[in-house]
Image 1 (cartoon, rainbow, N blue to C red):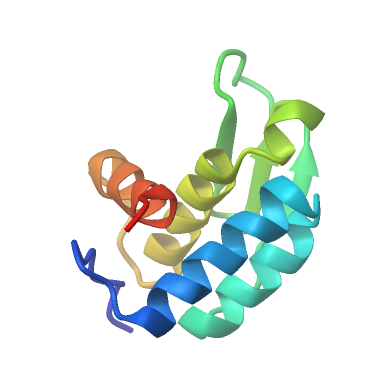
Image 2 (image 1 turned 180 degrees about the vertical axis):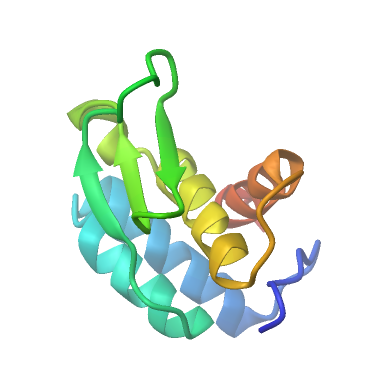
Length: 118
């Protein structure tokens, strides 16, 4: 599986997809549906989604636990923050793709690519 490219000028279809994901998370308050759509789009298993952080994590807004294939979001407020959810989904993509380290910058770029206006 190849990881998504970050395009400064995404195609119209890709831009519409990204806008739909952001809308599902922040406006419609349906983060699970957004994760399902992201998973289908990138052809990966859908990660689980939990509120609250796993043991040992205290300050993060969200985190991804690869052995559980679970995205943890610190609280309800951040559940509807598209940046946090999409950032953690990128870590899921990396895990499924077999790459685990050195991805914070890429996760940030991936999430921001969904939030950029044309």
